[in-house]
Image (cartoon, rainbow, N blue to C red):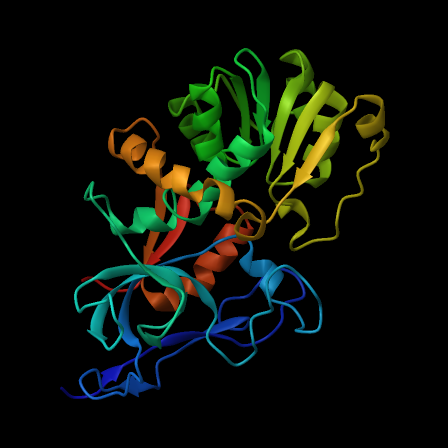
Length: 341
């Protein structure tokens, strides 16, 4: 076989605000690969089918000396993310050509890897992209942390920010199934409609309604799932009941702009609020992963938990999708389809 173009998405420069397509990341299609003859050195050759684009990308676009829970993307190298692919060739035991795999992949058409790859068991014949969303990192984040931290009881009230997003939408449905009253906020009327479709009793656009007024009108909250931080955290502290549990999953409000300074932290003390921060793979995967795989694929296959995807075709579009996710423009889990099988 003649050489095949092996395009990739390169981390080109550290952004000062929002990441800029064509500047922060660039698509480089100069490299080729000989799929029949390239050395595998005991590894596997993977054809990338789809990759996940997530809010946490922004935190990896930093100087490498700045510590965080994940290393910085190396400048001049392909960025990486969870992806699904098929095996073209294999020299690794347990993997054969044609298998579908899930793992952290460099964002390029073809990769050779020796570790960090899991064969996908798709017994329900679900779309492969779902293993990047509802059955991937976002699904596990929602399931594991809700199980670990919510201590939810039927009849309580939960407030979910960025509730139409990849994680938030799953939290909404888990809470609803457990008998909670669910309040969800989002940044567009389209997303508000989606929230009502998946069971939120109260869904509102935080850009056009005052969050604190909504939460107080609905009688306050017992559980807060926070994907946003900042002003939403402040309003939730004000509306919290005594003994409320706050699950701090993300802080989207400060990823690209000057952080908002929450001014009522004393509410944590006076109301006995418990705040939980977590990193899913560090803190919870070992405890909840087996149950997740026993429970969630079947529920998803039966339609008991629904998902919505925002799919873009073409690896060269990754920079645009990264920016859209940072601005909250995606509706559902952001996925870039790289190739057909």
